[in-house]
Image 1: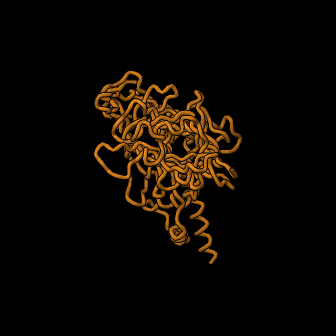
Image 2 (image 1 turned 120 degrees about the horizontal axis):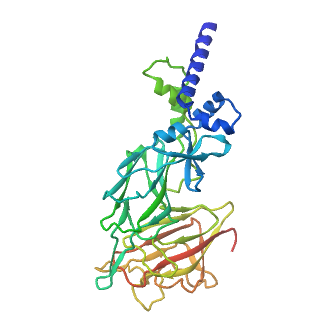
Image 3 (image 1 turned 180 degrees about the vertical axis):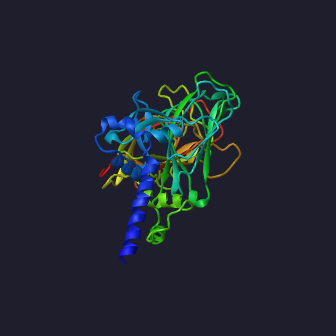
Length: 403
């Protein structure tokens, strides 16, 4: 029995040493200047946290990712400062056109010269638990769409295609959630920048995060059963040993959007805008858009209040009020207009006899307050035709506990 226990202890120590060696590269020497802990302690914490992506600010106040210096350099990044808590460096990464990233957090920005068209970025699954892709548009400005008033067609010249979305114009500050269900066989999502016009002011900086869903209880039990024995250490199963002892049970539960949501606002107050929105009304929202907007309910919240500061969409009948059948005819005909914002279970405050679900035209331009009950969702739809009135909306929301 003592001999068996001795062998087990030896294997555990060997495995920890392997993990330390795998992560304790020469990068530690740079941030040891600000850290009094010894190298072995740093290596152990690095092995334990190696898969957890943390955001940081570089010395140039740009968004970066916390990681070891070795991993930063090997992934093509540039160390620019240190992370709080002395964990690694703040790495500024920039995925190049037509390159592949398997990192949990990837930053892409426009090249200095637009020599490739299209410019594709391939995001491959970071782990088998990945289920969503969050894209944050820290900076996004492509050539504005061009409008033909005769044909009522709005077209994007230079554009970004991702999933079912085609985006152009100014979308700085926006975000998108896309399903990335590895369990269902999706292993890669591609972002394609089509730049036929090579507009001189095109620029973008996107932060892309792969979000992991919680592992099912059954799967966790299976993994636990598989890891209750100590495998024999050799070169063939060394990667498995690293996985077993450095695997993390972290998931991104707080960041995950409810299934079906393309935008997810997690703060109790905020502002929701259409893509390519400008306050001065100088441009148009994009055609062919169909997406769901969700707002996270706070503790004890029973309702949500919306108030538009700007609201201008097309209307089936120009002189109509802009509710329900004015926005979307129940009879399908050629050329039927289908631009609307759907807010389920909503009503106009202080006017209880108006209980619409669909809003269009300028129905919210007078800034009435809307009240809606849970779930806090909106659905935006735009058809393939564009009128000069389609400048979009900017809506403030506030999650409330009482009316």
